[in-house]
Length: 168
Image 1: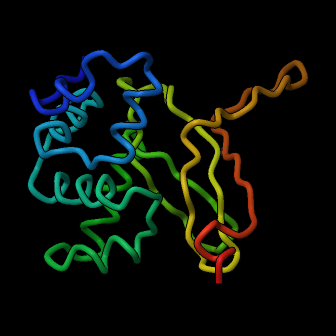
Image 2 (image 1 turned 60 degrees about the vertical axis):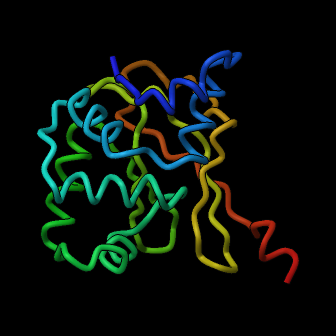
Image 3 (image 1 turned 45 degrees about the vertical axis):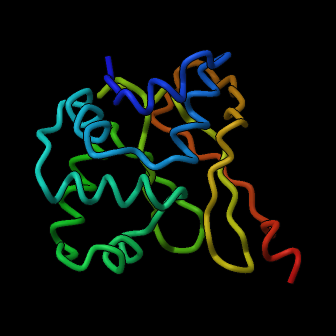
């Protein structure tokens, strides 16, 4: 069970659904204590660098590449960020998104399990600005695989032009 601060609980009280919770988390960056609780729920020991990296992912509000994280975290070198992301990935604390731009992007996984991702959703890659966005309200459709096939992950990406670039 993830425990959230009083501020977060007050904002979530009376929420009609789990979607309200995920919407709140996606548009309001997590606080340090929530990040620590998320790490513990995924079996990860919180360290200063790991917390900083997870906070950067939370504050971005969209999936980020290793390069983007490196640009945003002046005090942590690329290898330190990469090691943390590898750990996060192995514990299902981040989703790894391949958007076709020859760059892998990462976003926090808000499921409470270190073995299963329960918050998978559709992503949108803007071909004009090169940013990847989460479409949190759109679930990945289930696909019936033939007998004997076992999926290990799903990456559902829609490509096109985002609203900001459409106005240009």
